[in-house]
Length: 592
Image (spheres, rainbow, N blue to C red):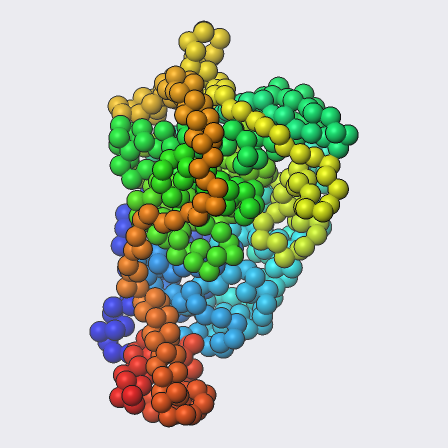
């Protein structure tokens, strides 16, 4: 039985942090209407998590709900949500698996993933209906009916007391597909019948920019000449920015991203230079950058290039690395300059000090672009800006130019592999593996600064007068002392472009990265003493002690576990409270 002191310590802190104006307005509307379902669309970086947990804390305090369940796309986001909830006095368990029945005692709920819900929807339904529950569906577009997750989410949470849906961008679906718990209106997008989601509260990028909630973003576009050999054995050369046909453009883009060429190291050097400027002159001493790769093979090669070009090891974050979540957390809190990743930080992951993004991927859907750019726009002070380095190809320039528009993203479900976490991506064909018919071969690619794009305006930095002057309203929020305007950024990048090209060419010529292994030059950081982290560590310690006692007494581990539960009654360790786990640990220590 929890003591009054323990209960008070776990009481939600409804006023733990000041709320932004939009969060207060959204909470006011929710409390006025008290709806069963509520959809909030807020631009990436605006603070959807804080809004959702503040609402959860208020509902818990009023006893309108007794449990909170958060459903999110990835395992790392489970940890992020649990930490954020813990800071607000809400104990959510991010380690509850489908193999465990009840919610762990001493918590007020748990964090799970859409994939986990799809695995046992009836189990999650039982957890959501045993007591009055608020279900928070983070990035709810992942629950589309085109995915197997859609039906599972509806089955699991159709009878929950309250449901809060969150998304970073509005979305459309096909006429015969509906995301559970979302309201739609008929929409004839591009002449096709379909449905468009309607949010109960919307907070777009323009509003967030005006409120200084997000950073102003400038896009630094780099062109270059790519050379490749096609399936007919012919050598083809084309500029990224003047490729002509879509097919040629895609092949030029693909060649530029090849780790063996010069485009990637040149842009990484420019990115590193920008990080240095932000740290030394831009008022961001902890500024960091993200390199977004198409796949894990490219990510590993890009990490080597970062080490060679900058002299410092990046944080290499891959989804199949069991330490991926810990690496994201360490990069977030540490001092490393650059992280190289594929999709681990593309959606929802909070790294406020990341202010520079290098787009070295073929992904080009509007949703993915908005979510990835959203990783570098979260504002901490008015004296910060963000820069995105990208290939000067039409699909990306079009997305960058429309960044400040209120856009609804078409998100058709994947045509194959229905359990994919993200929407289908329009990618060029990958290079054939060894032993397959060689149809395409990247030869070389160079890089040249093209222009800075901001608000649809190109700034070349050449002062030719051919560039449209920066709009007055854009100057207002970029003209803060200590910040570079888009034109000044363009001038800086243009001036250093030749120097960078010489520097990278010399480094590449040395060929000093053969057999190179990326090493970490930033120390491990101590884990914060969070309640759910305490429980996870206690379970690991109990298992270690059980193993030692089993070896000492020649008893099976299962027998030791049974004896332990008889000595310290309670549920299995996976769902036991921290207090029970501590008592069992002490009991095991006396048995040694």
